[in-house]
Image (cartoon, rainbow, N blue to C red):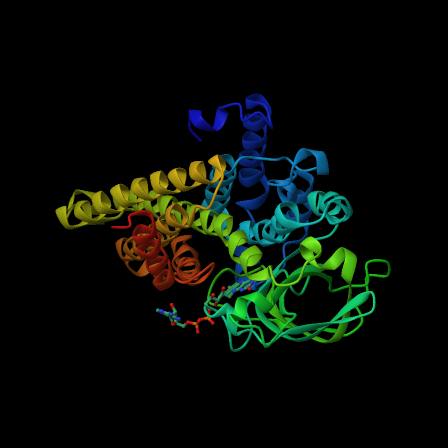
Length: 401
Ligand SMILES: Cc1cc2nc3c(=O)[nH]c(=O)nc-3n(C[C@H](O)[C@H](O)[C@H](O)COP(=O)(O)OP(=O)(O)OC[C@H]3O[C@@H](n4cnc5c(N)ncnc54)[C@H](O)[C@@H]3O)c2cc1C
């Protein structure tokens, strides 16, 4: 953490901010590092660590203090995410998906919706995520088929979502639906509904909701990613329809992705940093031809490039986070940070694995997990193909001739 983290943001004092970061550091060393590999390999939900993250306020990290959150600026948030990802990236997914749901309410919700949901989101009493993707629609979000029709005081949702983080263990989701499937252009018929997936009194499955199984994954394990189906599932219209107006959901969902992209880019920084650190250490210990491999020029060329790219990724993430904190849309900055930092994470993890030789292929060394975690970052929160298209479109829009 550098000095900028200690800047007084006007929301949280510099001292409180530093104390939070220090306490996360201590928690990572004491509680996460000793068990991360074991839980990850067993793909086991880390209940106690999720509880700890609620206690530390991470589920309310970006929620305004008036609703019980920490109200952190994105710059501090991105540093926390990068630091946790150095230890175990999956942990950041629990609270980031949840915060993307919360930010939709905070940014676009009615006053009654903010007062009703945000305090319970901030403590982690209710945990959830953002349900956009469907079996037949990921990048092309306007092609979703899940619908919601008004029925008196409720909306009734029908359809299926897939690849949803916090869908199995969570309590609630911000679900992107079509309230007018025939609208042209298609995004005008889309809305977001805050949808409890459990009966919030009894904890049982909510009416009309069926959770799928946790999906087995290459990496990013431990966290529950799954499918969820809705069959005429009722959602209270007043508390559920974000902003109280149909047809604004596409903007809400894609606006939420900007902080999601800063978060994914920060995860990339964490992965790259740790992979670099492991490579620097290992290459000084492992000997071939009578000297540490770090003294072979072929390895030095790799380390030099890995270090420079990791630093460049850190700076781009800072740039995007600061732009986010200044306000307004940050598609360009978040897109650049997301693309570069996550491609860097993938490259640096791969190079570090190669530097580790056969040991890089062993579950006894952390590099194997970093290597499996990195590819998700290229896909999630908008694929890296789409990021470059977004960057180019923004460049053209900001520089008309
Ligand atoms: C572990 C994990 C967790 C996830 N968590 C969530 C979550 O919590 N909530 C949620 O809603 N979603 C989640 N997702 C889904 C994720 O957001 C989507 O997978 C992603 O948006 C890509 O969609 P897709 O998989 O349908 O790929 P597709 O859209 O089918 O794309 C396939 C390929 O085609 C390329 N492509 C598509 N369209 C274009 C185009 N117009 N131009 C150029 N190239 C294009 C893509 O870049 C990609 O390479 C998660 C995914 C994973 C793997």
